Image (cartoon, rainbow, N blue to C red):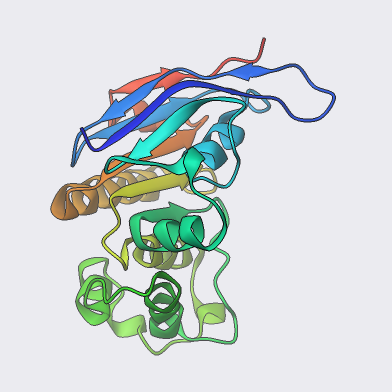
Length: 210
């Protein structure tokens, strides 16, 4: 067992408590977290990433309980072992493509993957020294994925990675995530309301607001 979340509950101030389905994944396995807007999908992603502390339950990655970690120890563990693909790429405009990936190595204090090789695999080899401001939407999303993969994390979390992509690029991004997760033996969790993704990742749980 590489990743497991159990009995997770969380409530935002003044709101009803959210209860989340349990998740269990082995190395290289993929799962979708489906749900409508406002159902709590992003809250669940933040719990799985250790960005929020659950009221009850636990999140375990590589036998480490994220809910029991604090401060710098948690930040370092997240930097090394969790790769997050955000809905918007959030790339650093002052840095070129390669430098954006090098920042992941810096914050994770980990050598990680060979950046040039990773960019080549993602079809971005010729963009290594390009300004991120010159990238198309699809290219920026792939750089965001490359950054999440740079440290060979044990868990990849992708938040609505296809929401602004057409069908062709949606298929490419999902295949890319699955292939790379399998290659490095990571667990992959994709949080989405995009039902097109179900054709590529049949394993799913559903989050429903009460």
